[in-house]
Image 1: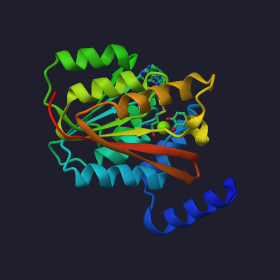
Image 2: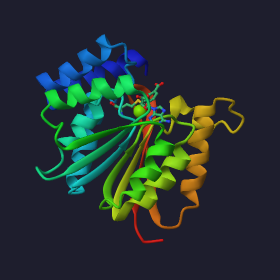
Image 3: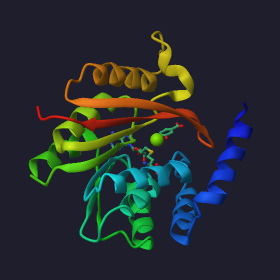
Image 4: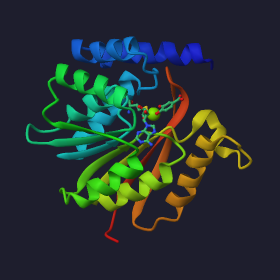
Amino acid sequence: MTQEQWSQVDEYIVKLLVPSDDALEAALTASSEAGLPAINVAPNQGKFLSILASIQGATNILEIGTLGGYSTIWLARALPADGRLVTLELDPKHAGVARRNLARARVGELVSVRIGPALETLPRLAAEGLPPFDFVFIDADKQNIPEYFEWALKLTRVGGVIVVDNVVRKGAVIDPATTDVNVQGVRRFNELLAKTPRVSATTLQTVGSKGHDGFALIRVTSAV
Ligand code: SAH
Ligand code: DHB
Ligand code: MG
């Protein structure tokens, strides 16, 4: 199969099952016009995340890696009216675009965009004593995925769900000699996940408009 076929099948699925709307379209247009890279999740992946968060009955969601807030809109739409979503973003320009996109999608009131390196904003978040999260989406820089996963574990309730994007990287993940720091981060994460006792986890490979990659799906099964 070729990338073109994967993209055509994604188009077919999205046309049938993932009708877009003005807010999602405007978020992508505004992100592109602001020069943000098009590394948001695909529409069918965004809806997949939203359905997962709904199944989970999530009321408190944490996202690490906001970009223009496209995945954030999908996740926020799974929340009840009194739900909360905190999303962490390094780049103030990305955060600004995201805040406007979230407001346009009418989920701005539910979402707090925190600016800074996530390894600095996560300890601050932990110190705030917020209720534990029931759903976490990790989708920032790939070098630090192991550290983000450790923070997610600390901040998530028993029964909580953690999803990690980009854990296959066109299959590069199986190369132990890789010199790509992103792939090294993913490999360190997979090794950490394999020896973490308090979780049940698996990974699904994906192909589609975003190429060949994958999601890790983790359920926190017991307390520390
Ligand atoms: N979740 C988004 C895509 C996120 S892209 C979506 O699917 O729509 C990854 C984002 O992580 C980028 O905006 C990048 O600026 C941000 N990022 C990179 N390093 C980071 C760090 N150390 N802390 C927080 N965010 C970071
Ligand atoms: C890339 C893709 C992503 O989904 C992401 O979160 C970061 C980077 C990429 O293709 O480079
Ligand atoms: Mg991603």
